[in-house]
Image (cartoon, rainbow, N blue to C red):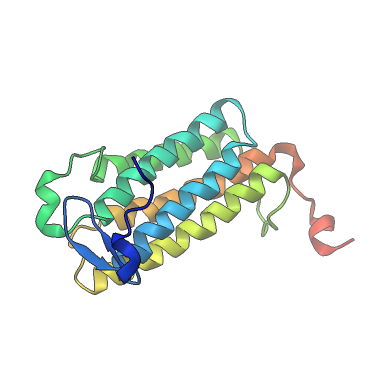
Length: 184
């Protein structure tokens, strides 16, 4: 199997289950940014161990589901499978419980957090900001009528929240003090 197909040399890309769109299409921007989020999470996961490592891997796998749905024309959605290539309400709702459990383990700071308390937390914060960009791009898709189901959008919104709380947990006791934040 070759990595290159040369079919994209004309500035288009193939979609899951058929169809081609421009590489600058709203759809390719959205699922490309989801892929970028997944890669940023790989950097974070390389710095983590145990439960946090496993949670980040779980999110990465879920982002493949989001990306698959975004990379499929609506007329082919009947071929998608929930949890494999299609996001459903249960996937979104499960994030709420995971966020709550994380906050219970590690209460959130009551001040603005400057990213960089640890390498892992910094990578998680980077992934969070990329995820927020993906969310904005999915909103653009939805507003353009390319995404009639809001589950991928809702998933990305909650995912960014989860990444924030995971970053705080990854910092653990290494959270900067108010004095550190004030520069003194």
